[in-house]
Image (cartoon, rainbow, N blue to C red; front, top):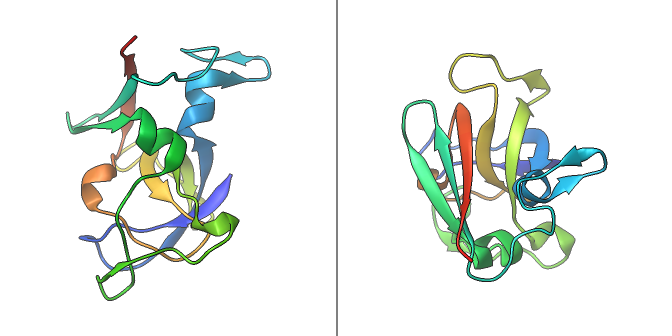
Length: 138
């Protein structure tokens, strides 16, 4: 997966991230088993935690439908342009702007909301140095 993403409260630049969809990591793909082999079900949520203790919990709806507020480069709330690029993906990135994330902050995995177009999301959804993913619910 390769998409763009940026944080509203960060430097104001959009970078190109490469990584895996959080939903694929949870479900597993090919020979890599996931924590929920059948994928997420309604009522479940996922908490992602970083090395600094910061965590964010995503609902089933956010993971499957991409329900996030998006902003343009001026910080104004905007609606993504139509088409496939308008669907956000919660991604676990291992590479940004063509460079592997380091083992120190913010790497080696960073979680963020990614689009096929230049949009920003609230920085509260971004986690650096991801070290734990927990699925809860029925």
